[in-house]
Image (tube, rainbow, N blue to C red; front, top):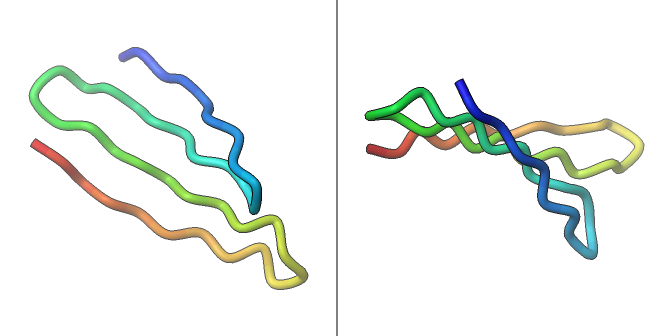
Length: 41
């Protein structure tokens, strides 16, 4: 598994590469510290 972090103006995205599938985890860094996930093929 490979991973990388991309800093954004508001929060950051961690990308985890599992070969055929990638998981994108977006963290907002707000008071609630929300996190969203996107699976890509």
